[in-house]
Length: 225
Length: 225
Image 1 (tube, chains in turn green, orange):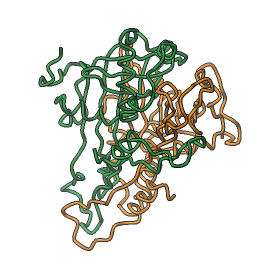
Image 2 (spheres, chains in turn brown, purple):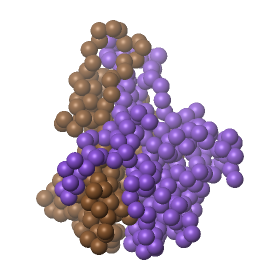
Image 3 (cartoon, chains in turn yellow, orange):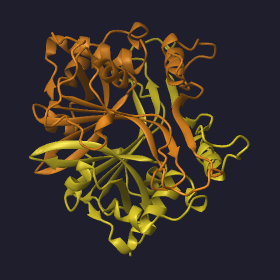
Image 4 (cartoon, chains in turn red, blue):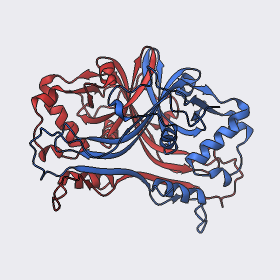
């Protein structure tokens, strides 16, 4: 069992070289970034070349679950293979007084590991964790997965033991040598994800209440929970 | 010069196997997805293992520009190397009546190519394209880049000639064999990125107007342009 109060280990692979002061080794920050993520970009090596595809993701303790169909090429390619799983939240645009100093506010996680299939007897649990994360508790509103559905689904997992976390926050950098007048506006334009109005399917009878899981997902997107 | 009315070529690498009906070969769709993107996830092979990191990006005609510092490890690693550059827009959560049929609405682009450095005499142009894309016309509000700044910046570019485009849209799937009552709500929760209030740096004198580039970036995030 990983001690979650232990800092993330930093080795030759996970050490951040560029802007090293932005590396964070607190696991609670790792968890928070992943718990906001619905998608991860997963990289594998295919025939010696890189391939990067988006996957649905959810954290389950000290592992990250990745979801796809058994028919997906990358699910097959990634199974048992080294992967690099990257999650990035773009939090804002940093307008400095020069294009050179302009940048972005973001939080990113880069996980290095081997993707292993969740065994059959843990698949129901893993799919519940994924569904309840992605769809905010949806499993309480729909029927359980059938054996056939479970068999048709592959869930991969990757240990979080080798993860880099980088956080770029704070105000724009100021070059003290720069002669730019202070009358040029500088600052940050925050960016965030929000939910729009839920769109019921055509076959939903009028008056059917919007379920709790949708309300929760909308609140999550608005940063209210 | 690439004929932009020509469909994207589909070969063994760029052919989408999973949900093949979602592959789009219209270059205008490729362009639209990239023109909404501020970040791309770039994969390279390092010591035989995959590495995926986020880069700022901007489309310049039929190439994609990738921006980082010359000090960045991945910029060095990617220069002249095969890369896979992936952009994903998550447009919504699809609540079906089963967890099995629940999914996501998204648009993704996967570019396969070799990352080459923009030559010195084209770097100023490339940085203008990047800045004006990311910061919505900011180059008209700040001074030009200096020779020192240009020398300290690497811009990579990747041809868009080998790109896969996948678009998942439309209502939730319905399994006709499923006995779930129609009283269970099904539908889509749209997700989008919006801008918050611009936050001026502490040294901006009160009353300094918020510049056009910020207003345009906020309007872009709201889908108003």
